[in-house]
Amino acid sequence: MPLSSTHIPLGIVAPSFALPNTVDGKIISIDDFPNAKAYAIFFICNHCPYVIHLQKGLVEFANDYLSKGVAIFAISSNDILNYPEDAPDRMKKVALDANFPFPYLYDETQEVAKSYHAACTPDLYLFNQDRKLVYRGEFDNSRKGNSEPVTGNSFRKACDLILANQPVPKEQIPSIGCGIKWK
Image (cartoon, rainbow, N blue to C red; front, side):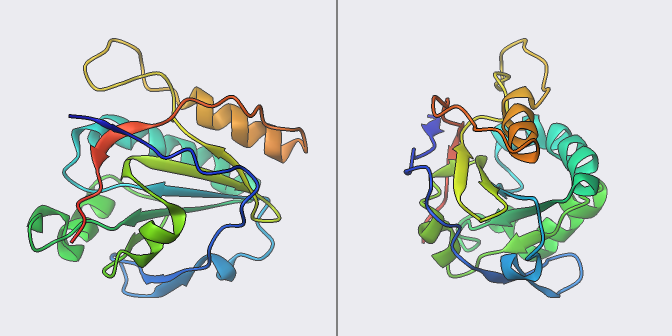
């Protein structure tokens, strides 16, 4: 049964993190990008059909927005003992096969997911240049099983507004996906 993302309060500051990138083993921190114009954080995993449905769209979004100064991170926090398909070696394979232009980070302790109040995959967050939360919600209105194309229009609109120094509407539709697999 699908789960909705948690609508945490807008304006909270993005918690810091430092996690290993499963592709190259380097530790990546949100603090490594102090001059970003925005910060996009995707809580995803390998096996969730909702993530798989959006995966190409997430890559297209990143390819369009990295050059505009948006720092983008994908994080998997799932319990790999009960869900071995989400283990770091398989994360690396997914990242390489899908040509992720962003780091795919492993949150082994699940502390980062907890600090962001992440509830499902995908759970998508967008922060402004001051690292204040301005958007948490759906990528677009496409869902696994409906006929709507994956466009990323909801997330892209919010990002475009940030980049134009315009306010992002507070009315936001939650993301829907598989629940994070907690230990």
